[in-house]
Image 1 (cartoon, helix red, strand yellow):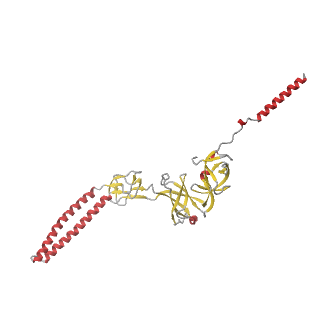
Image 2 (spheres, rainbow, N blue to C red):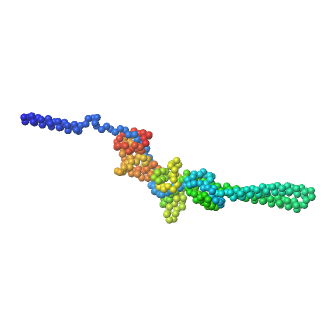
Image 3 (cartoon, rainbow, N blue to C red):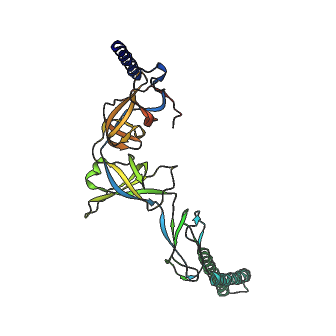
Length: 361
């Protein structure tokens, strides 16, 4: 009886041991398979000339922004609405020209009268010249006829000048856009009276914009026209080029004006938008830079994935520095020519095999 009990216990222990061993030994099909190759897009790190950047405030301004004034007196009959886009030479406003047109008709009638009198006097002068040659008229009468002809000629010239001046004033009753742009504001309304020099409307060339920033005098020696600078226009990164350096500083603020051209083909920049301009504050140095899309920002720091010769991903921690456009200076285990992942890094793991695919987005 005791032998049966002992045997039963041994069998129970063997079964338990077998079950325990089975819990740790999984079939091959249940083991984790290696991760498939990830499709990524890479961009090589490169050596670039970069300088420390000082962020200064600026604004998007139009290169052509004018308060257009009237050139004649009169009642305003029409003004373009705010927001209207006009080409150079198009009507911006109109002034009542009825009195001027009446004046023009008066001068035209006067000119015709003088032309008729002059024609008659020319004939009279010729007649007196013939009589004088035959000795039947005195030289005095000939000179009088010649004098009357000269007076009529001058009267005709004055009348023609007055007519042309009135015609010019009629033309100026149409206030024309001096350049292509958009009406920003109306300063006179229909029915109000204008006069020479009175502002009618503000016109802004919204397609000819630039950034104007105030830079400290201390960095002037590091700036030159033609250099590229980074821009942040209302949170939208861009790259511009310094076009003008106004080398006249303000005594109180110790700043001077820098003008930067905005890139063509980008979104429409709104005049008056706030801009941060990254200006070099020291001499440029050669550094290792990567495309900004290669950087992965996480709570534990900034890092990137480098692809080694075996097409496997290596995670590299870096610190960032100066940035110009899409390129950012990095310090860490990154060298010139290293292939860095710019698309698909979020799904990569250390040591994972990759497949280079330029179509990855």
